[in-house]
Image 1 (cartoon, rainbow, N blue to C red):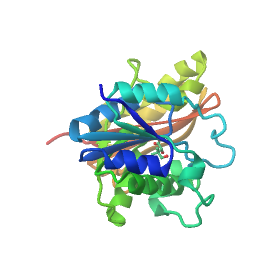
Image 2: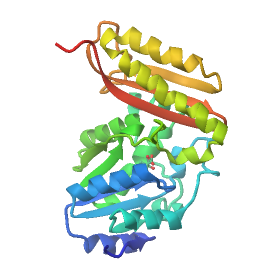
Image 3: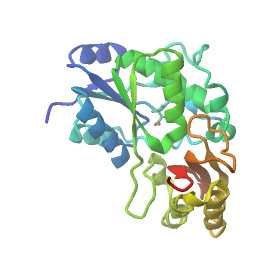
Amino acid sequence: MTQLVVARTRAELAAARDALPGPVAVVMTMGALHAGHAELVRRARERAASVLVTVFLNPLQFGPGEDLARYPRTLDADLELAAGCGADVVFAPGPDVVYPDGDPLVRISAGPLGQVLEGASRPGHFDGVLTVVTKLLHLTRADLAFFGQKDAQQLLLVRRTVRDLDLGVEVVAVPTVREEDGLALSSRNRYLTPFDREVALVLGRALRAGEAAAPEGPSAVRRAARDVLVREPAARVDYLALVDPATLADVPEHHRGEALLALAARVGSTRLIDNVPLVVGRPG
Ligand code: PAF
């Protein structure tokens, strides 16, 4: 195993980056790494000569009253996991390094795609995400960037940012990693009590029910997923949506082809999201 380099400052990052053979892949995280992040690093390892992981809890993407203060901070364990799955460099800056002048006056606007689904519940969230993603792409000078399908709206918006602003990086999507019982891996799963965790399984069950109904058409998908969710009132559903994966617009009843079934629900004090890409309609 190669020795992991940890960079905390821009100068340390620049020196570490200069020493990396290309192509260089970046995996961006907010820390509290889990097997889903490990999978991103492994996939990056397969495509790139070097892998750089960023661990930065980005205050800009948290709204007032969200979980920034209690978000798990586990840097030592994160470094161990990153080294164990083949990262070459971890960039773990503080907010003063990423935002040396304080909150940036100029930010990336996510536009209309950032105002629906997650964006409707978390105003400004995606502006904060895209601003830091763009900065980290510049700072790391990555050739490829790996993002999880679990955050499908984020992935779409990063792709649009790269295309619309000509950022010249290849964005690679990695399928959601799940526990054996179907729970999608998330740093926020650490907040779940054993009771919450049982309740949280309803998200995966609802998505699977929707997926199974896909041959019948959009309303069958929505109905099947909703029927599962209503049987678990301890999960307070924020949204359940069957949308076009490129526009995030609700798919009409006559829609056949690719769609994204996405949902968000609050379980205990934790807000969870999950989604599944599916094909609506009967093949042929
Ligand atoms: O997906 C995340 O963990 C974050 O939104 C990201 C991409 C690291 C930006 O802070």
